[in-house]
Amino acid sequence: MTTRRDPDRLIRAFLLEGEDVLTDSVYDAVRAEIDQTSQRAGFGPWRTPTMSKIVPIGLGVAAVVFALFAGAQLFGTPTGGFGGPPDSSATPAASASPEPSVERSATPEAIEPYQVVVSEPDDPVQVSFTVTSPGWMDLPGLGGLTKNDDGLDPPDTEGIAVLAWSWPAGTGFHVYGHPCQWSSTIPETPATTWREILAGFEAQAETEILGGGGPPPFAHGIDGVRLGLQVPLAYEVPGATREEEFSACDESIYAFYGIEGGTEPERNAQGPGQIDELWILDVDGRTVILDVAYGPATPAELIDEAKALVESATFEVP
Image (cartoon, rainbow, N blue to C red; front, top):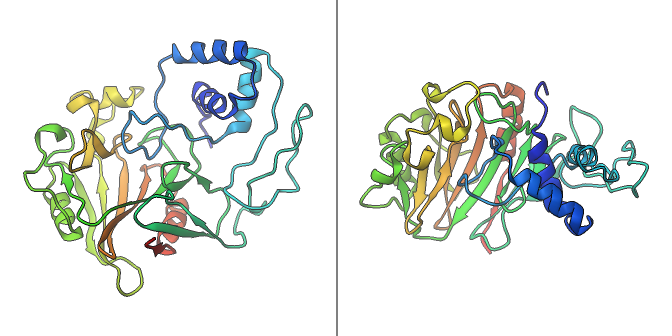
């Protein structure tokens, strides 16, 4: 990658993972210092920008930054993949016991395929992907995988995320009339089927539909549609934060849709130019949305990997 990660963001993730290992005085001092610093949010598939969950990735780098920052000892450095046996090529830090690697393979081209459940245990539909290339990492609590997370928002990020979210039968979706003025363009009647959700996106102001109307590539019995959404690049302000770029929008949020009864958007954009390729599905009466989210700078081969994950999806209703 050409852009390094945000150190504050990594330290924060490291602290949240390692709070039980640090002394109280060191932890409190560093955490307080970080919390005083304003930072640009990293590219991530957050449902809303106020979610408190931090993706615990890049912990090896975070440990080094933390050591330089606080004068603490170095910690072991796990590698970047998701799941699998230890990588014999990994070299742990001298001051710590070796941590098991989570990299499936050292080869960059392909790995032995493995299946991973990305849904939360209480989700109405359990979604699994078959991973065939290295470097994919779990998004704990967010229902998906990510690769090449560089801490940037679109249009600058070269990373990508694959999300899998599901809702109970009968759930109503508010596809906003305008993503920027979302709070005042909530439809009177919520959409409850994939056809109604598609119609809402087709009518949504500013949203550019990419290849809408195509069928999903799944087994017989799963109905739905595949389409793409893109945020206008007109919102781009070089060097600005996400909130500054969307400052003209309601609550400085650019939002695609919400859920009936909810007080915040369910899916918002991380930056101008963001592309969300959606598979909106009916799985035994329950709505499932698979979302491949990336920016215009994301390499084409990485997008192909993400689409292969989606097309490998299997579904189980508990």
